[in-house]
Length: 271
Image 1 (cartoon, one colour):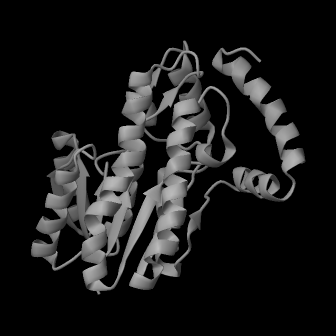
Image 2 (cartoon, one colour):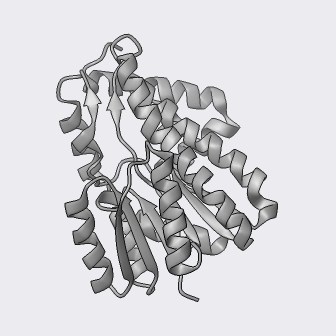
């Protein structure tokens, strides 16, 4: 059966990689994005890759955008199988320096954007008796490094929502996957907000050093939906750190403190 997939923030970065990965399987892929030029380009790339591409303008800060897309796709395709809540932004800064406006901005997109995606499509999934939400969080929401206050909180919120919905919706035939990658090459810093000098360049360096690509993460996501896995943790080192945190919290706290001092020095903060 042909998969029917909707991806927020699908015109670039990880969203685009997920769209093209599903396209290779002949899926019908709708990408929602605030960038129409990129969106139309990726729509054609989906078609070229063997899928059926469809671009719609979508701002995850508006519930009505997502509700309209759900109605549109239900009419066009007869339903939706996978919703990837991928759209997100980045920020960095200390608790003193990050403005409340930046806190509200990132929470509105990173947390409430995912909430809106789940809220808009849950009724259709329940009617179908099936469906999968793929919520893009981050290892930042599990590791909680300093000087990333608002970003960490936003991604921890996505993790909490995903765990909650996994229990809440399971008996309705709805699966939830929570994706927590560490650094990999993407365009996340293009809209990043921070008062820390050179933060974008430092984060870009870390992303470029990663051996994990957006395509690798997309492969893991598709497998998680097929196998019914909740956690998607693509980076081996960070996955081991997460296990350490759960089973040996004091050891993790000591290691994290050492890493944090190095991180803060690199990012221009005070250790």
